[in-house]
Length: 258
Image (cartoon, rainbow, N blue to C red; front, side, top):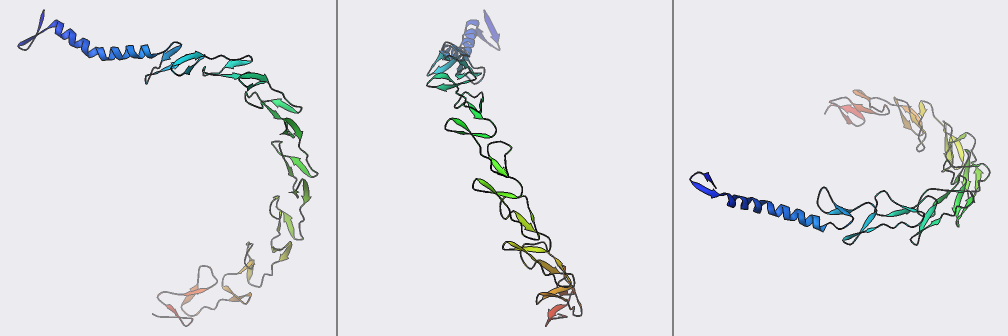
């Protein structure tokens, strides 16, 4: 039988041979991939290659069974094992967790497999009580202690914070632990009153004089003197100095035309 195409005829056997040649590489490759998958393994759905079945792990190019010791189980991925609750790994075995007094199991398969209760901390394989000094308290985590308000840590004790007259506690245990009331500033360990001159107001800053002149006044010899405006001038934005109106320019402390 011949198939006519145009003026030339092609034998059916020739067409079948071409189809086999086209499909052969894929078929051969698939057969090779199937042949490359070892026992107790399965081919990956995507990307080629293979993975070991659950309960087996890869060792070189083969899959060997995962042998879990006593008191152990195969983990979720199926290629390893871990100890049951209450046991930890040791030299390829699972040994019981020795929980000290005032401790409890964590459920972790790695050492030590236990933690201390609140108010205790690990020490030499035991749970040692945390000594809380007077005017101290356990932290929220329970593994350390802090001092109450008005006290700060000094070694293993809580010492009272000495607040000077006209001062107040800040609630912070670092630094001085106190601040001065409004109108006072810290000088050493005391709170000294800020001397605010006439026509001035307090300035909430820890540096400088602690006060500033009101609008229309400027500092002069530690006091506030009225700003003297020359003709054709106005107060600056700060209100403590002056500048010339446009187009006037400063000349010999006056405002003159350019």
